[in-house]
Image (cartoon, rainbow, N blue to C red; front, side, top):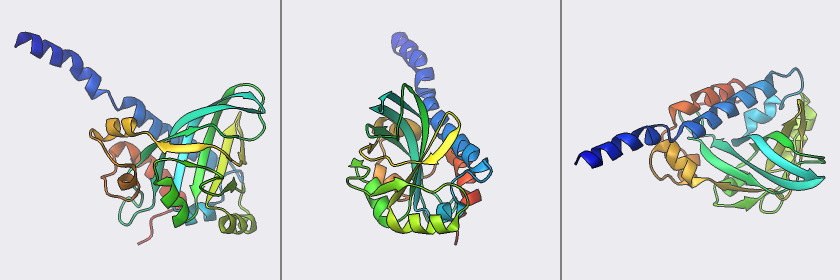
Length: 224
């Protein structure tokens, strides 16, 4: 009995902290969005975010190679829902492969995906899909140009953006694959959860995502 109790006490801190890394990623995603939108006339057009069905943020995507190279990163995805806070519980996503513009050497890139319609959302809710293959993706416009924003919203299911070395720009993410990270989601919610249920508002949003919702609602407020 004493041995069992000792084992439980030893493992308890590990379980208590099991979601720390995942919750820090959610917080980092909120910071990335804030920094990009605070940039004078260099952020994502607000009218695009107002129309967005979902928003995905992959902070610190790892990249390496010459022109075309390996890429890997984890981020979070949330979609619009009815009722407060107006956004679904976040789902952890993995981005792998593909091309993030011309590149030389290694580094990290923040990536933002703005999903413009229900079709794009339905594809994001699948277990795995390829940008540019299963779903149309294009580099989104930067700044406050309403004309560019309207044109982009009409021609792509998903708009891609990246920030590297302080430079923010619309970017095509052709060939990159996205899939949910079920293990990380289980750590966030304390139980197995379904990616599609998360994005459709079937799971209670975690408290750790409130700063992210706050940032999103500044630019894409919930409308009753």
